[in-house]
Structure formats: C-alpha cells, structure tokens
Image 1 (cartoon, one colour):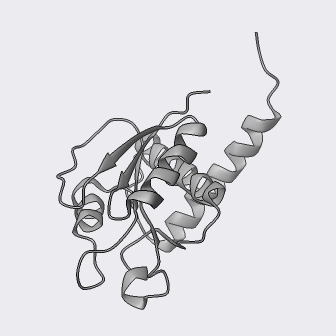
Image 2 (cartoon, rainbow, N blue to C red; image 1 turned 180 degrees about the horizontal axis):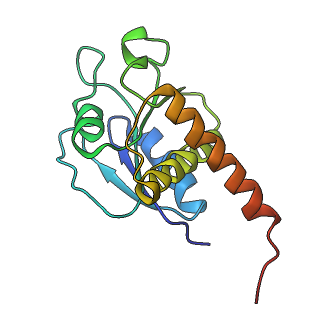
Length: 151
C-alpha cells in the first residue's frame, strides 16, 4: 500500500540509514537518501527528515536548514540521543537502539501534522499547537481504522 509522504534520510550513518529506508519502504513511503551537505528542495508531498548522525560540534546543518528554510519535521536517530544540545533542534530524538516501527509511526504522525497544517493554514509551532495537531492526527487515525472498506 502506497502512503502519501516522502521520507528523507541522511547518510551520516549508512547502516542506520539503510535500515530506516527499508522500514519506511515497507510501510509504503517514498524514501530518498540525502548527504549531510545536500541542499534540500521544497516538495508538495508531506515530508519528514530523519538525521542519522551529527556534524562536528553536536549539530546538524542539514537538519537546521530543513527546519528553518523548508519547515520540515526533523527527527534524529543517533548514539548521541542523550545530548542536551541535540534535543532543542529536533521534533523527535531516538537512540540508535530504537525499534524502527516507532520511528515509522512518529514519522507518519509528523507527516500527517504537516498535511493538516497545509489544509488548515495553521502556521503556529508552539507546544500547545503541536499538541492540538497531534490529537487531531490520533483521532483521524482511529476514524481511518474504523471506516469500512468500500469497493
């Protein structure tokens, strides 16, 4: 089943990037690998960036540009998940031993929030707005699951 949405995965850590790509591909998402220095372009499809490592100095220029210029949700899967400097720049941070199904689930929710922002014109990025959008995404997921399949 093909899902709407595109997942960009950084190549900081190639083995992790490969496992993430396989998990998102299996879930039906379009995936692309991006280098840490690549310039990302805007895309109409809801998109999420998964960063698999950091640049020197506990930062990710790729993630910073994606969030600031393109307003993409950005997650990190890294050995440095406990770094307090890392937590501020990402929507979600996972340790390298994370269950990939959890990353796929939260990536899907991030894309659904992004889609809702586009539909409603909501531009706020406060914690309160994030909670409202997350609640709507959860409700829509329940409605989608309980709808009978039409042929």
